[in-house]
Length: 264
Image (cartoon, rainbow, N blue to C red; front, top):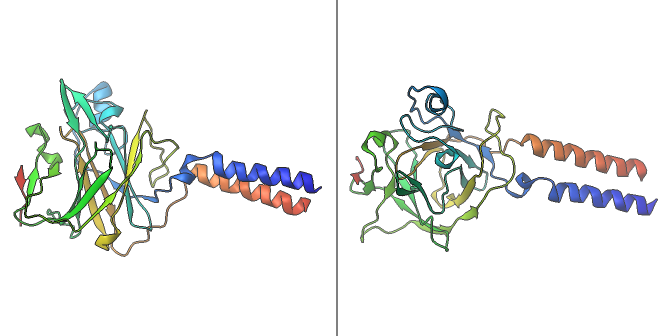
């Protein structure tokens, strides 16, 4: 009897520890919102340009494919902000013979057209580092490469010698990201290879914000929003719920068995 109970217990522990990467990467709640940029197209291009969804979507008139897709923002109760992307965040993606990099993450706290903070990210260094700055009317913001994608601005922050960071940190890097993840409407995030990075922004002590990220070419734009005073408790993913149910069944069985200038 004791031997049987031990085998069942080992099975249950293994089920929880090894059957789902989502348990090891608890990104919290999906906060992705539509970027509001849509256009017209036909065939595969129409599928990627016409949608208001952020999965399998790029801005109108741009190259399509998973490698250009910025997919989701997540946020958890520890004030960890995570971005998930098909775009290779930790280097460059080449289009028209030009290598393009991911931009900085901008944060708006007033629900207006200005950004108050930026995460200045060193995406491609081995240190995985970032610095948080506050933005002023004179802050130097760089725009995207293609002018027709100006709606995707700002791209990145260029600090001056007089700019001092409010905080700095090391981001968590997932390259590639494994596991299954879902939007808040329980739609699975699809596509091929994807990557993720998580940033601690607890030092800002934010009570609601909007986050913005684009890539150097402006091919895709990603936005996320946390309502002020909102509850950021994560919505369990379907895979997680299945595992939890299986684990409870196991335990139950044991019991029975026994360049832009920021506007002011």
